[in-house]
Length: 204
Image (cartoon, rainbow, N blue to C red; front, side, top):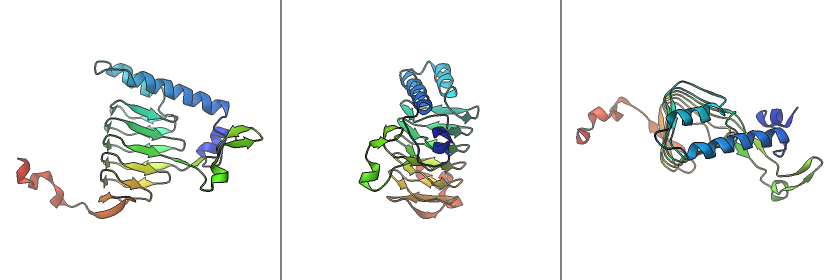
C-alpha cells in the first residue's frame, strides 16, 4: 500500500510522504487564495474549492476563513453552508449530506494520534522523521445543523436532521432527529413538531 492508501484505510502512515506533502501544499495554497478573496469574487471562490474537493453538489458555500488538510477527501452535498472559520482535517474521508449548516468555528477532525507520549512524539523511523498518525472517517447526514464552535472527532456519524448545540465536542455517533449538546456531546431530546418556529408567537 502507498502511504496515501494507508491513510485512507485508517492505518498508521508517514505524513512526510512526497505525494501527501504535495497534496497538502496544493490545498493550503488554495485556502490561502480563497481566504484573500472578497464578496465580489464568488466565481473565484467556487473554482478554488472545486479544484481541491473530492466531490460536491451544485450549491455550496463557505465563508472565509476555511482550512482543509487535503480537500480531496471531503465530499459535500447540496445546499451546504459554512459560516466563518471552518476547519476540516480530512485525513480520512469526510462525507457531508444535503442541507447541512455549520456555524462559525466548526472543526471536523478525523486524525488520531497515539495516547502514549513515547509513541506520539516525533521520532526517526526507517523512512524518516515524523509523528505517528492514523484517522477515522466522519459522516454528517442530511439536514444537520452544527452550531457555533462544534468539534466533531474522527469515527463519528451524525444522523439526518440532528442539531448539535454550540461548543459541543462530538465523540460518539448521534442518532437522527435529535438535539444533542455538551462536552462530550449527548442526546438531550428528540425533535418534535412542537419545535416549529411557527409556534413561537414571540418571533412574529
